[in-house]
Length: 339
Image (tube, rainbow, N blue to C red; front, side, top):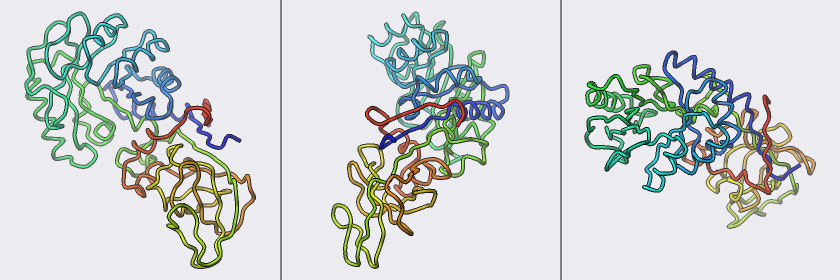
């Protein structure tokens, strides 16, 4: 087995698109596949999302969109991030759609005007009269996963600013808003994290009918016993108080298993066990209830071990966990139609 094996379940992606489509009703679903589909592989995820009912794909940069254009020649590709003049020319040639957040509106390419209603990042302070190349109006919620009141304020600001242009498609909802705030769905919803079966609120994705699409596996490389007073790993952050069995698993922060994930749980030979000591670049130690064989399977993600749970231990969000995984060679990645 590859020391770090990632499996992307495209059946789960298809299921999640279907679940989101059912939730959205007549609202279009625009699948956000930036950051290599949140670490899941945009080249694999994007065609499935489109085939399952997503009406458009959203990315952060023009190079991301150009890579997808070769895979999805007829798809709507929307670049959410800022662009340079060189980007505009490439976007025009490739039939991309751009988001304008400042400055002049480029000609000859479809654009979405982005109004800053409270995110405090990219966005227009005031909405200009949309010209002929404007094909959409949008804003970006700052706290749809944590502050419904401020989200309502942002929505009201946006609706007031765009009330005279209701003939243009308007889109504001992210995954959190699309799932829980029907009034935000408008003409389209830009859903990212939910597409991959991860709860935007850091809880159980099953409550929204979502299935995690990513599985991460390894195996036990070494089993040893620590006598009382003996430690494991850099800095002796774990010292055995009693005779303790540990397994060493050959994944670490070079693979995306963050140092602040010490204390999280993984499955070792089907049992939940706890990570102890400092996470190394290429290894972690797992405290065992009882010894296991070298080569025993280890599940880091999947089978009830969730990115949300790892994120809670690390004090971060599941987005950062999955986007930080290293799925490039020589680590292995496989894609299954339905796992």
